[in-house]
Length: 178
Image (cartoon, rainbow, N blue to C red; front, side, top):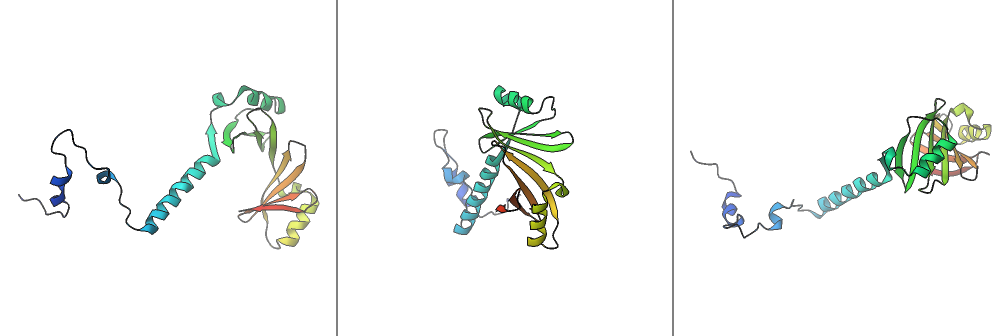
């Protein structure tokens, strides 16, 4: 029985080592990307994967510094079911506090950065509700979050369609994120 003729068969004898001391060239194992456009797409995809991996990484509680764990227990005594993540070099503790989704962002030294508390859109200050009604007529608020920074300053994050808007308590728009 004769083997089907394959165009790479004629190259096999030259590529395979004849004794154990020779090695196959690295290009033999490499994935050939022939076009520059494909090369760019491949590199862009790899960079996106790395960026996503760096944004938020799940952390086990045993790997969280004891000062950070202690600070969470001080702020929210008896809270259970905490999910830990690393975000921009800080520890994020996410949990339900009295049936409300809450996230606390702390530094490695347990310095408070921000507390995010999910609220109902109807709980937003009247000034923000009016600003949204004026600037986004006919659109509804999907999510609302109260943000309290380390100095006690409160801002509000509002999600409309696929965009998040941050407002001051007085209804002034601070920034936009897609």
